[in-house]
Every structure is written in C-alpha cells, then in structure tokens.
Image 1 (cartoon, rainbow over the protein chains, first blue to last red):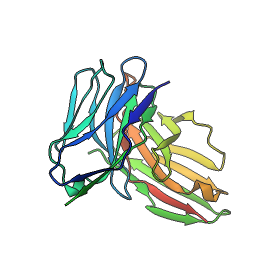
Image 2: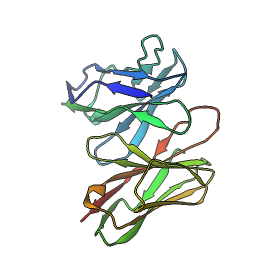
Image 3: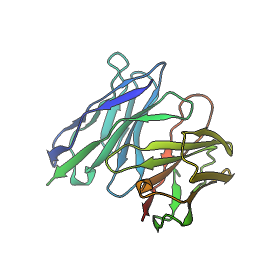
Length: 111
Length: 115
C-alpha cells in the first residue's frame, strides 16, 4: 500500500536558518503530493502541492519538488521565521479520496 | 475562497450525552470527509461522503454517526462516547472531479473532550 516517511522531529532552528524536511514516499501509479502545516491548536492548512513529476510547489517561501526518480518531496525554505513554528505533514493521494499522511515533523524556530 | 468552517470549536461531553459536530463549505465541493486526530499523530480518516452519499466508512464504531444533509453540510452525531474518543475532529472537502487525486481542504477542527 501507499506510505509516506518523514524525518523525525523536533527540528529546532534559529531564525533565518535554512530549512529542509525530508519526505519520501511509496505508491503505485502517479500520486499527487502535498505538504500541510498545522499551527498549535489549529486544523491543517494546505501549504503546497505538486501533481506530476518535476513539478515544483511553492508558497510563502516554502518549496518542494516532486522527484519521481528518488520518490521524494522534500520541503525547503531559505530563511525561517519564528512564525513558521508548526507541525508539517507530507502527504500523498493516489485518488479514490484517500490521503496517506506522514507522521509529521515539528519545527521550532527560536529567535 | 478555500474555507471550511466547523462548529463548535471546543466540546466537552459526558459519556451518556448526545451531541453533534457541524461542518460547512461553500466552495461547491462534492466530497466531504471526517478525520480524527490524536495528539502528535497524523489525521485518521473516518468517513467520506461523495455527492451526499457515504462512500467510505473506515470501520468506525457506531457511536459515531455521520450525516450529509446537502452538498454544503456535513454533521457527525456523537452518542455514548468513551474517554478515548477525546481528540481533534477535522472536516475536509474536495472537488471530486473523478480525474485523479483532488486536493483536500481542512477546517480548523473541533476539540472534543469526553469525561
């Protein structure tokens, strides 16, 4: 079945540091890939997505590229802010209404 | 507008109570979802409605009863819950194009505590 593996957290960075959160997946066919962010006490917000190989999703300074050859969708940001502190979920959907989530990576940015 | 709204934001109930969670979207989406999320875990799918018909039930106990009165509304009726049912309940919706994987948009959730 489909699966998503994310790097374990928590990840602690200083403000303005470079962020990478690794995500790899296993799926049949050509899934769509997503990053969702969950701020403390809130629901999930779609951060970015990519629907086919070599697509780059981007939003609010975050980027991720759909790499089919390495089955990866790593999240990056050049300069993190304290307000980016949250839990980040990598997810995939192969259709049929089901989304497979990774376990989530907690990011803490300190001033 | 990609907004899904949920009420109430917080709910505390006893094990003998009956309560309902409500979800609403006005994006014209035809698929709606209920998820349960425990602390420090990813969301777990409970139910999916497609065109107002239940299409997926992930073997959820009958004390949870979903209802989709129309294409914009989704309810989750709760009865005789257990303390282990305490969690964040998330609603989501998607277009349901039938052309592949549709993006799901989530509401802010209802924080449920069962005493």
